[in-house]
Structures are given as structure tokens and as C-alpha cells.
Image (cartoon, rainbow, N blue to C red; front, top):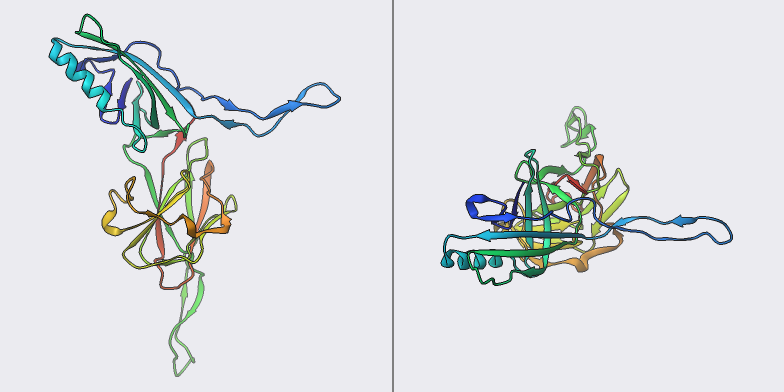
Length: 298
């Protein structure tokens, strides 16, 4: 198993960094349970169960051939562990070739200074607020284009002397189908590039609706909705990196989230029918939806 914390690789002989003990926190996370005793009868009752955040513990060692190398390795591993608002992207490549991502914050780091400086022991405690482990086997998120639905049938255009109008038949544009192949609900990032007014994003499969109200932006704007983080940011097309606004780029437009249609929805396992609407016909007619399949434990 290979483990990366941002760009720093653990458990790699070439890097002289090894994971010594059991790697804790990659199986199922703790479960938050609401329950109580049944009044006047035996047994108990349960409410909805939810996953707690993921607690990850890594213990390892660094070996060096010289004191100067040992000190350099100490600096490297500590530089790879930033504090919030930066996050630590933990990438795990398992022995079967599958790769996973977990987005973490540093909770605790210990690396005692030993009398024998050629070897250093370390312990890293991480916490992932989102307990899902996301698939990274292909090295990138999945992406699909959402299009505004268009009714099919007979379409009329300009007036014709013979038939009073010019008409044609159109097959129309159906809803966009997104298949979540993982066994858990995953929350997408949706990027609307271009002019849009009061956009509405609906997961027709689950019935959840999310919308911006009183919102109007021009053709060079980028509106990015993160359904898990429950954020919506406004940037420009020049801000995009790999099709998304990077962390910290763009301003919040959360105040435009509708008071009535504010379901921050996810993609249920299986097929999800997604609809994009807006209030003006000349608004951009597409958006990009990005997601990763996930698992709760490996």
C-alpha cells in the first residue's frame, strides 16, 4: 500500500519513509446513533443512523544515512501537513491497484527528537469531516454535461404564405441521466459557465430541488455549487483550473440560495435524472456536473 499526504509519499523505501504499525481509520467510521428505551415495554428503538467523521492514525519511521538527511526529512514531512483552511489530501493506492482519496485536517503530529538522529519515529492524527473514501483509480473525477430539457414534437418558426408558419419536428432534449456506481450517496460539484438567471438544479429521481433566487450573472461568469460543502461561489471563466474554481477562488453568493428550494442534494446509488432550468431563454443551456464514486471503508 502506498500513501500520499498531499505530495509527500509515505511507506516508500525510495523515500526512506515507512508505516510501521497498523494504519487505523480506513475501515467503516464510527456511527452516530439516536436511540432510546421503549416506555413500558422491553427493548429499545432506533432513529436514523449517520456516519461520524473519519479518524485516521498513521505511525511510521524515517531512516537516513546522515544527520543532514534526517533533518531534511523531518522538515519535509512537517511541511506536507498544513493547517485549515488548507486541507490535506490523503491518497491511498491499495495493493490491488485501486486508489482512494480522503480530504483531511491535521489534528496532531508527534515526532520526538532521538539521541540517535539517523532514525525518527512519527505519529500523524488526521480527521476527515467527510467520511467517504472517494475513488481515484482513474486519477480524476467523473464529469457529465447537464442540458436544459427541450420539448419534442412540432416546432414553429417564421410565417409561411402557404401554411401560415414554417414548422419542423424535433426529438427534443430529455433529462440528463447520471449513474452513481458506488453503494453510497455522493455529492457533486456543479459548474455553470456563462450567463444565467435564477438557475434551478433538480434531482428528479429523489425529488430534491436547489435554486438561486434573484440571481443574474453575465456571460463571463462561473457559478459553482458544491453540494457537500453547501457553498456557492461566483468567479470568472479565467479562474477555472481543470474545469472548476480552485479552493479560495471566487466570492460567496450564498445569500441568493432560495428560501424554499434549498435541498443540497446528492447522487443516490444507481441512475439519477438531473434537470437544469433558468428563468431566461438566452441563458446558458448546459452545466458540468463532477463527482467521484465512494465507499465507506476499505
